[in-house]
Length: 100
Length: 468
Image (cartoon, rainbow over all chains, first blue to last red; front, side, top):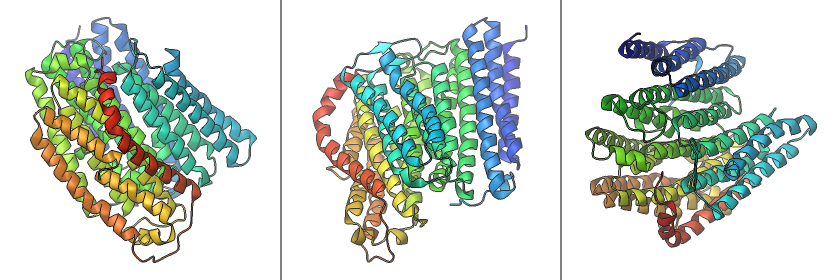
């Protein structure tokens, strides 16, 4: 059995990678990939703990959360496609209409 | 149980029905009628539930009084947003109504959910619909607003799910108020959840999306986003942090003091930042967006109180303040539609002189602004009064003083808009009767509720009786 602390460490590493991705990438599609990594890091935590304690509610939560993440990326791609039709570009540098 | 689920089931059914109706009828009138009928039916069922109120508790849903009040507020703003969006004339307008109804249906369930699984699912279902809503005129400006909203929303949901995962590891349960085995991990999970829900509530370091999104979307959509979507995050946070089980578990323990201090710092920063930045804005819609950040700071004050008496008072005052917030902020954003629908900008110069041409609209908009500033006969004053009173009740009088000072700053920028409205007109104004009707209704309700509030605030304390 792998100790829980390793899982916590790996998931924290994944979360950091995803956060770094969101803050630095310049393309819309890569942004969605980073979001997916962020959500999966938390899922990893839950599924590891639920398996160790054989608790079905944790597994159930992870299944639901994967479905929600899929819906989320569907909405994200829809917005990106609408943006592409307007500006012929999905780069984040084209977003300069709203400034404070 | 079914009578409490029925309002959202009706909204879900009608959200699919609007798409079906759009296949048959060619103009927008049928769509409008369908969505209005759906939301009014849902509103009537909710009123029936409120009158025959009976507390019921299940493993994932708490059907209680505050949930019902918040559900009524969501459906109320939905009805008036639908009225104000009637003459949008977009291609595929049925999707707008469908998304609005779907999102409100999920918000009602979020207001009732009492378990982290239910909270996460309903919160995400409501949020996903609002990301698509924000894109609505589908020009470059609104799509940028929508993409920013989506990215920040997804980031916030990642923080929430990480918080939930640490909560689950430290308590082995998704129930609110479950006892923890590891304090550090538990506090970390609470802080992550505050950050995640704080993005949605637009608290200070996480607010920047709100300004762009409220400014970039069409005015009635901004009204919906800045009221319903924000109050959903508020009721979810209230369920987690002010529930009786959680309070009896946490109050007095060393870790909770840090959470409380975190809330105090965040609410002070949010109020001050929102009000000070709003002073410098030339654009009325952007000023309203900043003032909604400032109002989020007032809303977050409810989490800083301690002690059973103060919490009961704070909970009933937050109901009054939420009512006030949804009326005045929703009405103020919707009235921007009057300028926007003719392709105008919403700067102070554009609004100047509108009172000479359309006095009724100007007076009702001014009443909403007075309510936002907290001038006595309105409900905005009552909400702030009882909220600050509950702070004093829990010995946080210095925080109450900071809040009152902030409220005094905000008077300046609201009154400046009112003064501009009574200047000499520079351009022509056209009428949009639906928007005028909505703004007038909101202004009348703001005054009536402001006069009636002192009569029912005493009953509210007994009806509420604390969260489970």
